[in-house]
Image (tube, rainbow, N blue to C red; front, side, top):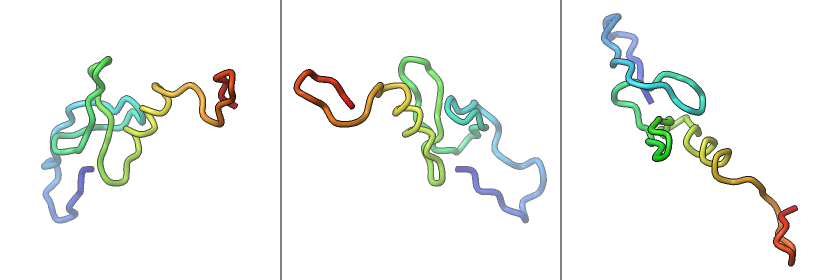
Length: 74
């Protein structure tokens, strides 16, 4: 996560390098990210962000609950 210093001169923030595939926020040089292997995009992975977890949960899992003997998840 980018940390801003109020004493830092304007225009010295790290360059924008990508857009987060989950929140659509800016990813700047120095941010902690995870690269998505099938899409080639990036998601935030640092302190204060849950983009990587939320992106994975939506893209990977299609059901959550208790499984029965017929392999149905309720």
